[in-house]
Image (cartoon, rainbow, N blue to C red; front, side, top):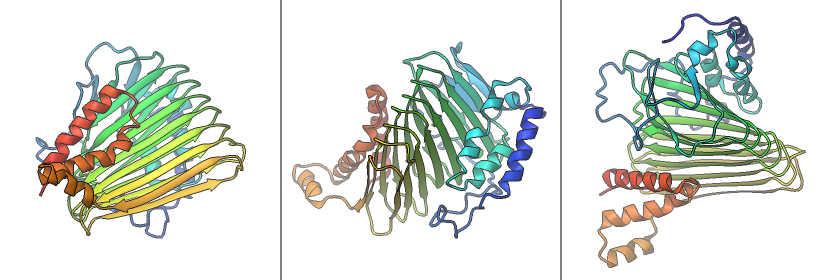
Length: 406
């Protein structure tokens, strides 16, 4: 349960963060980082879910969960081989291991981009978990987020620590409509590897913002895949700090939206701070019916980050003339021995390919689904585990056949 008390170290940190927060630029249209975004995502937005019918709003569910988060309650399916606890219990504990981590990455990630809603989260956590992984596991850790109607306008705070040499996969499912602002701070030790699949972007009928900040040590690997299925107005902010040589990272995202006035807003900043690191960003958006996808992807290369290899691709498939794709790729490079590239395109369904499939007797809706599947395949290919990739691809195929039809 949530502990109403807080520790002296958290109280001291809160005072410091609140004082420094006065200098953080607030959400507004004049900010380059919020231009064109849906400004419904603000910390005083009221979301009434007590009368909401949740039967058809459960979100993505592709595996039996190992951990279920239901409001301030965490339910474990089996004996755990990892250390996990309530973030509220941790910030109430004077001797908590989290005091060396909590808020450090959020504060660090304010340097290049103002993130006022992340600061709001640091000052007002209500639910969440602290997870420390010290042993590798081939079995993915599935965390399912349930909606608890008794909790409104909730700030969720998570902390993940992956120890030296440990490899793990986390799949996050559900959507938890009572949470509108989440922050996850991730620390990867030397040679650690984390595959993270964020599948919480289905049936989000309320505006929601999610932040993920990751600190990476030498030769560590972080692969992140995000899925947005008809999100009402979801904004995702990811910032990575590549702090040692030989780091590899991949950020991939698929947005499938065909409902009017629905938004997907993806924002990624990768800081190359060390020698010979590689990063990939692959974004695919399929849009219809006056929906919008926004992608801001930036690669920052410090002077000491020679031999950097940075790749960014943002592509959209617009299925009618009212859908919109807004992209702002950026490169900020202060080293001279690097390979960095970015590309952005918008297109419609290829008429020749569609005609070919129709001429072979394929139904028009099925042909449309096949072309959508082929279009998003590059992003799905960023998923290393073939069984997870296959299962997720099948899930998306079924979802697409239900929504993208004529």
